[in-house]
Amino acid sequence: MKITVKKLVTFALTAAVVATSITTGPTIKANAARTIGMDYAKIATVTTSSNESDELSGQNAIDGTMTTRWSSAFRDGEWIQLDFGKIVEIGGITIHWEAAYAKSFSIVWSQDGTTWNTALTHNCSYYSPETTDMFYNRPVRYIRIICNQRATQYGVSIHEIEACGNAYIDETTTEEETTTAQSTATSEVMNLAQDATATATSIEGTEYAASKAIDGDMNTRWSSSFRDAQSITLDLGSICNVGSVKIFWEAAYAKKYTISWSQDGTTWNVALTKTLSSYSPDTVDMFYNRPVRYIMITSNQRATEYGTSIYEIEVLGTKQIPTPQPTTEVTTCVVPTTEVTTAVETTTVAETTTEEETTTEVTAPVAPLEVIGAVVSTPRDNTVAVVWGQDAERLNSGCKYNVYVNGVKKLDNVVCNYYELTDLGIGNAQVVIKSVLNNVESEGVKFDVTVTGEQAANNVAFGATATATNVFDGNEASNLVDSDPYTVWRAMQMFPQVTVDLGTAQYVKSMEISWLGDYDAPKGFSFYYSNDGENWTMLTNVDKMNYQTLDTVSVNVEARYFLFSMGRYSNLAHFYGARDIKLFN
Image (cartoon, rainbow, N blue to C red; front, side):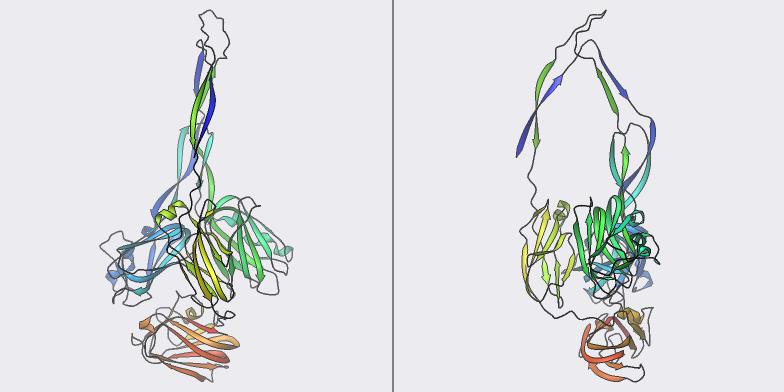
């Protein structure tokens, strides 16, 4: 609709004297940060899991020419990794594929090269010379592109990789100016927690104060009183763009925790709630450059009988920095409209009033575009996975998304991504995904699913000690028990063996082995158990008809040691490879 506003403008002029002066302030130097886009791949260091030859090395994928390329060995699971040298904000990844493209690939990222997070998995139903995937200005240092499945019998081959993001350039300008306005720039990515103030709902003792969680010392820690629902809050001092929150947990960690944020310390918004099935020394949660001042970490449920304890909290993001803008101050002197008698002839112009009409256009809030390309699945027991599509129109409009399960909001104002929801209960459930814009929700798309399973099984092999009779190219057996599908064990030996030591005898109901690929899986293997590591009892002998990439075996024994002996050759003769061994109780 249109709203017409009328205002009265009064002109008072005296023809005798009208004086106008222009005044400029002193000369100052203003430091400003200018944001530019750049391709960080051009300054990255490249590593790969394999190269088809020296002429087809990973460096070719970032050399800026489309006439060279990287090509991997002729098997699935190969990857190429970029190290930017420091944490930077990445907005999008473009891959220029050769004809031997990846039918399915994943892009994972890390801030330290140790803890990896999956950004996306992309399935290509046909060849496209290039793919572009949004990274939403994630603060990352490492990016790894993993070929889950090749489209041809050859390796996977890439001409060029572009990793586009923001760079900040300090500029010094000299102006004759008087500052009357300000705009905002941003700093480089930094740990905002270092300059924050920390408070907590409780402390175990004065030596475990909240400030210990942001003092940069991994030998000190914050510890709460011995009860659930305790929290620690960081005040960043001003509104900052927060990219991620990393928590370094002490052994008394939170089994379930929530991270909330606020701009004023009064109105709070839930960013995420996370449940940990086992202890992890650190967790990283994305904040997607939210503009926040306060961050609150709430321990909903403790994992031990003690309080919740945190060594350090790391908040990576950028500060909003006001920068002076040059303006010109104009001072106009108008003689009052009274009759002036002087030696010269004076003419007085009467005050007149003119009605000036202006029209202001007011538009109703724009409704959000409906969700596209949504897929809801139950990839395993007690879990519902949701993912949906994103195009340029929706991205540019600023659409966010809410996800409801049986009418209860489970994801609030999130960006397009892949999410797994747990702790939903067993049985039928309705999942609704709605887009959000200007606090207005779309009607949404609905899915009816059935959540199966019992109490989630615990992988007792996670963090156990794993050894092998052979290791190829530094891919250690310990990678089999880290629950990270992107780290692997490899061997190049006839009939290698892997031993897993649980530390104490534990009941194991079932076992699962995830092989690196069809070519790396053995045609058969034997499975043994022991309580002393010397006297072994065969549990089963698996003789497979094909080279499947996932094997599951019923166990139902109590033991401390478990041994896997690779039997018949893999497709690559003496070359074996696996991602994970899991023992469920």
